[in-house]
Length: 325
Image 1 (cartoon, rainbow, N blue to C red):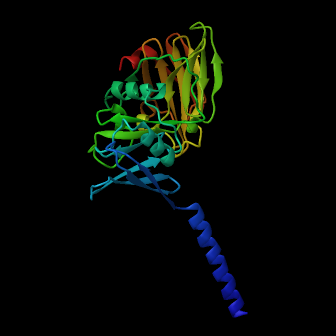
Image 2 (image 1 turned 90 degrees about the vertical axis):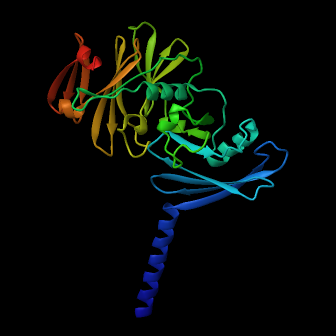
Image 3 (image 1 turned 180 degrees about the vertical axis):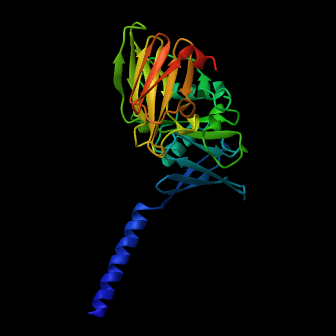
């Protein structure tokens, strides 16, 4: 009986251990062989991936023919972010598009493009346009961007990868562990986190513009053109959820030239209200601490004033005042 109980405990422990290993950290390793530096000789890169519940860690070891040195780069992808940046050694020749394509497909399963995408343009504008806000101000985020219309309907089912140089502003929010030592980077954009694209509001003011939302983004549609005006990336706004599998857009409404977006952070259990002036290309966020707001039930705009219903209390905020901050 003692041996039987002991055997049962060993079996149970083994099953628990196997289950933990199956759903915990795991490793992948694969090799890409190509003429990476276009010198006519075959080179290789060994890619190692470790994943856990919060994200993935990548290690790439580049070996060039005739060179005894191994160049190792590392990168992390956090599941709360849309972007991942992987530094590339100087020896990697970006003219070898087929290699970059193979690399992005092996690492992320993403197609590689050399053409600037609308999402990246939005990121660049928001990062460049962000202004410093004094403490205890009515708003705690302010930036500007150009509302850029594009004819292609955004594909929120599949992302893409591209390359940027070290002076790209987008690297300011794509985490990596190299202190900007390299001159070129491969960046992956994980559009699948948007999950869906649906029409939130059809309005006649401004004429002909409709409002579309995803789980984490907001777009405008005018005839057959689209424009990104918001992607709720935690690295941009320093407010969001631990994982993008949880939708963060609670609602989005349009009032004439203003779009108001209510987002929710599951990890912080709090809402955030963003106001976007599509004529001026300005975006601000209401300072919850200043206005003593935690959760938002509803909101309207009347007489140049936004009225927020927040947990049975009503806050009236003058728009001209907060946009001039």
